[in-house]
Image (cartoon, rainbow, N blue to C red; front, side, top):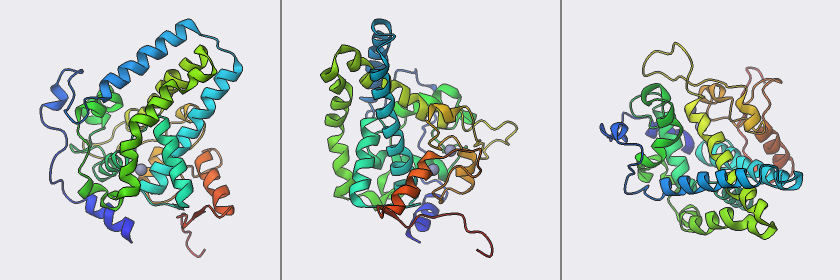
Length: 294
Ligand SMILES: [Zn+2]
Ligand SMILES: [Zn+2]
């Protein structure tokens, strides 16, 4: 009931439009005061990744496997932790599991949970309307893919996630610099090739995998202006390690359930993991589609 109340509260007519009329006309490099660190960070990881790809284009299978494993774990942190558990309350993880998922998401560059969840609930409440800060239908591909990250302030916590406004979530915001420093430099322990691949190259890959959900999964053709243009994008499943986020039309149709892939040909590793964790007693209150008569 609480989750439903929060979602309906977020779906009330907008009280304050998050994109100022001029923001989409700013030069790409201009940032809001609140987000001024984001653009330099993104430039840093892209520049480092480029150098890494030039110096170590073939770093060896163990380094690639290590980078892919961290990206996989980070993707799980975002889809199971941030998205399904915290933003939509489609499941209730054990507090220790929730903390691990948050750490993995932050280590993979998804930002702090309060920021992520507030932006995501705003997106659902206003999908592809003028108040949707990441709509490609209204603002174009690059805006939806990246620019809104540094050109729009985070939505107000008191409106979009008052349920997260306490110490156990706020603390992660303060831990973010340390976690990202470890994420960027940590691979150095295993050598220079690992520094580039486990750090910046993995961060850039994971960033764009996530950003495609905004920029590509909201491009359903022939959608009337101002209406939800979410779509399922099959090829994105590969970039998401089949974790399920690419079934975005399904998700917009039933945002409150834990399962994103609805058929055998829509793999959803995130949901499979939820099922395993539930069997182990580490996850409870998993919300599923109720069938009539079931
Ligand atoms: Zn969406
Ligand atoms: Zn969602």
